[in-house]
Length: 178
Image (cartoon, rainbow, N blue to C red; front, side):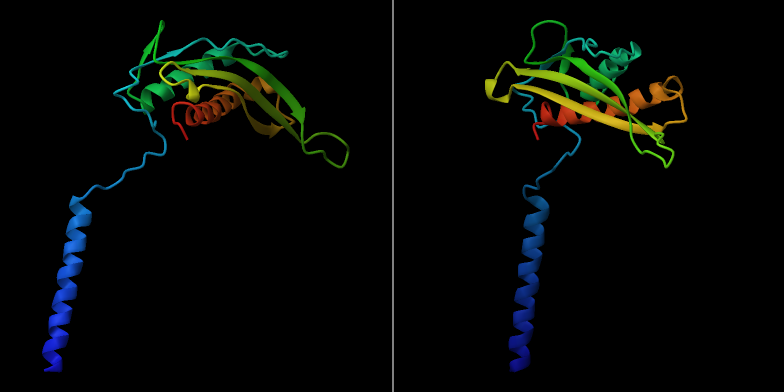
């Protein structure tokens, strides 16, 4: 008799577990996209990305094109927005405000063993559908390199790396809506 009760309880428990698994598998499962946008594509269809001129005291001309290309590529890879040159639902504009070299780790003979390249970008993000989402913010990122190297030998690669990081920061604060 006790064996029958135990068997019935186990069968009921198995049925309950099967029902829970079935509901979980067929029910609404949330999905998270950590590199994509959180935009409602029924509302937002277009984005305009203006030029980001260099307004820094130290100027490396290829940086502007590198940064702009990285930003446009990232938006096209991670959203379904159509880029436009005119009026749009969303606008990104700004300028590169800093391109600075600073000595870092100092050796025993008082010379720097590392140099830091820091790039700063000011971004104005305008959401023409919802003013609460507008942002006017400054972003910066840096990379250190061996001070024995000339900046001219490493700046293309460093600018590419820093631009990628800046674009991710900007995207997550604007279009990613984190």
